Amino acid sequence: GAVVSQHPSRVICKSGTSVKIECRSLDFQATTMFWYRQFPKQSLMLMATSNEGSKATYEQGVEKDKFLINHASLTLSTLTVTSAHPEDSSFYICSARGAGAISEAFFGQGTRLTVV
Amino acid sequence: AQKITQTQPGMFVQEKEAVTLDCTYDTSDPSYGLFWYKQPSSGEMIFLIYQGSYDQQNATEGRYSLNFQKARKSANLVISASQLGDSAMYFCAMTKEGGGNKLTFGTGTQLKVEL
Image 1 (cartoon, rainbow over the protein chains, first blue to last red):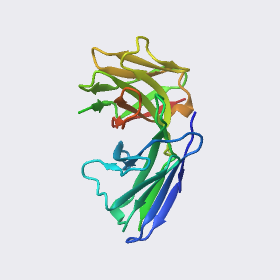
Image 2 (cartoon, helix red, strand yellow):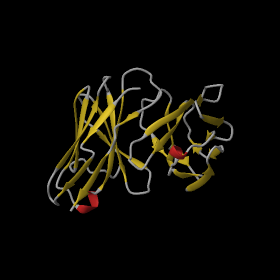
Image 3 (spheres, each protein chain N blue to C red):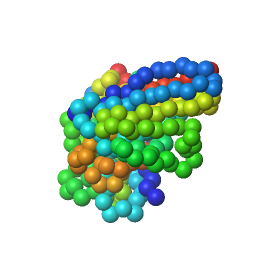
Image 4 (cartoon, each protein chain N blue to C red):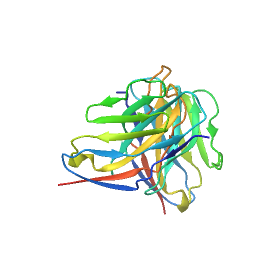
């Protein structure tokens, strides 16, 4: 199956700093990427949808100025958590799909962010 | 709006036995897709099986099968011959047909396979 690589897998940062998470499709061109957030023992909640070359579409309640998403190429989308605070600590995971009618979304390995 | 319901927060099954994980859904879309994902403790989401709303046959992938009952809006996952490595969190999800759009996830079922 298609491979989506997400980095870093774990990151610890100080409160007030920014953290960038990368999501790459390794063997296909991802026209659409999705960013999810998962709190411990909870489900995945969609944060935003990004399409290559255009602005991301954010879900209701997600601060677009805090969670900056860039999808500059067909193989790379980035999520930047700006001015991180301890409440931003969570598991962030991306998924990607290509342009064809594939019947699954491929997920990255996820990033566990801890803000101290 | 679409909604996925998983009513079993936790399930236990003995090794080599079969187990059914429940999933019901609600949608007004005439065309949609249903997914099951496995999430081990490491966090990655592993795709297991897909069922399209117009598929006549129930989907099967190795030891996984999806019991799709459209009229009841249920899409239960059946795992046969459980293995210790099947212990994980299992999520049911749905999207519009074609898999292109965002996924709506259920709350998940934690499965533990015991000796």
